[in-house]
Image (cartoon, rainbow, N blue to C red):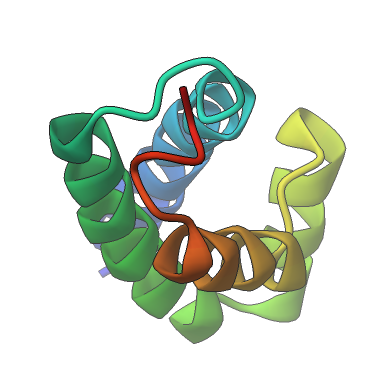
Length: 87
């Protein structure tokens, strides 16, 4: 059981790096495919992040500066952005 918790925390930490990269890239790339992929990844990650313990959430923040409200805000902003605005 301990091994499974470690794997999940490791996966979440690794995924936080990917989310951090999406946050950086969303300023440059606004293709429909990129935005759809980003929304899918953000939603999945946010669901798992919210299920994580507060100590794991804090470790993720220290590791990547990614936190729940930041992801939620980026997800909400991506819903409002039209593809034309990105050009």
